[in-house]
Image 1 (tube, rainbow over the protein chains, first blue to last red):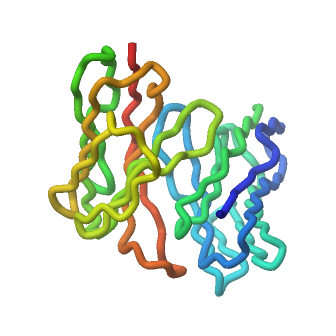
Image 2: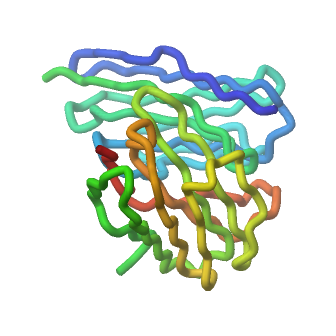
Image 3: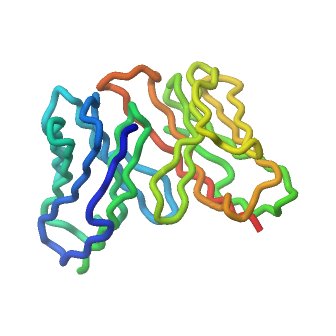
Amino acid sequence: KQEVTQIPAALSVPEGENLVLNCSFTDSAIYNLQWFRQDPGKGLTSLLLIQSSQREQTSGRLNASLDKSSGRSTLYIAASQPGDSATYLCAVPNDMRFGAGTRLTVKP
Amino acid sequence: ETGVTQTPRHLVMGMTNKKSLKCEQHLGHNAMYWYKQSAKKPLELMFVYSLEERVENNSVPSRFSPECPNSSHLFLHLHTLQPEDSALYLCASSQELTRDEYNEQFFGPGTRLTVL
């Protein structure tokens, strides 16, 4: 059964810093991986979908990578801003399994 | 309306009440999902529907009863809930339920449920 883990559970950084969020999954036979953002009390907003045939996907200041063989994905956020403060979740959509998220705080 | 919508956004109910949560997707998708999100826990899959047929019931208590009258609408009927059922209930949809690299889920804003 697929298990998805995210470390750290919480992260606080000063504005302008580049940062990396980590996601690991136990079953490497995945078709894709999806990263979401969730603001407090709100639904999930899709950020990036990385297909297994890709190793990387970029959107603005966000870059997500996928390494199936090691069971890992990372979300890189460049030049962080206070507006990036939220919880970031990774998921294996085909298995309908989600990580518990990393709560990010970017301090002005 | 665009995307996935959910009503109501907030709901407070007693343990003896009956209420329903509604989800509607405007994306032309064929698969819909109910998830439960409790504090500091990963999302838990509750039910999955594909073309109005329930394909997964993830050991959910019978006090939760889903209904999918068509591929655009999904309901979650609630009856005799417990305080531990208080959570954020999220609806999602995807194009199909096939296992492929294009399967991507889109979420609604959720219903914050409080059971007194």
